[in-house]
Image (cartoon, rainbow, N blue to C red; front, side, top):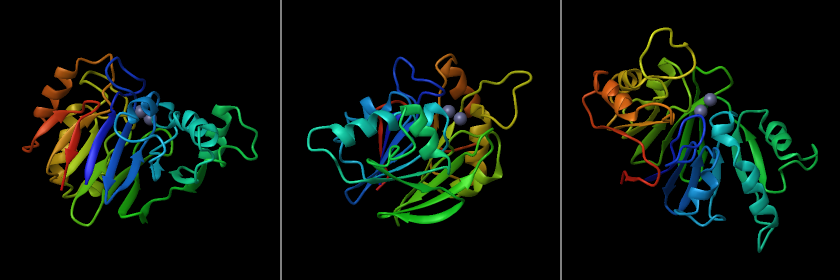
Length: 250
Ligand SMILES: [Zn+2]
Ligand SMILES: [Zn+2]
């Protein structure tokens, strides 16, 4: 499996990266985890804009889903359009919320380009992938994912505070893409995001092969985020996500 960090900026695009988007490829099948603000642009450095086979949205905060609107334009009106519908796995309210963001009437909404499928916790097949979705600890309905192709697996936290669900999803995964939005400090809110140290604690409990810290908020000093992660008791390799980096897990 090939995993490309398209966007790893937390909460809004930064100067060096769009917001959340990860491209997973196996056997010629291409799936996106999230399509956050700005990511549709950088995506085109890695794959043809019409060559995406499925999209999974972890939750409906703008930094994880909003480029669906621009992608609808490309697939509905671009040269050669309309393109075949592609599945978008997302929380139940996605068609209404994303249609409203675009300014679409309820009918047809964005469904000239996408076939929305409601995410619920559990495992199911998407092309050659098996995706397991689990509810994580965030103020809105939010999922973490585990994606496996039979030989390798990657886990993605989405946005979450501390949760055993992430440990379960990531158990034994080759790679954990884990959010590290906060730096340590007094009075951090709970049930929202993780620090680098907490990300590493989850990676240690799940015994993953490699930890990549992501959802890096531009106002943080990322060296501090990494340093805090190194104090989280995880003994495997840890690094900061960077837009454009590819992990070949095969
Ligand atoms: Zn976010
Ligand atoms: Zn969020």
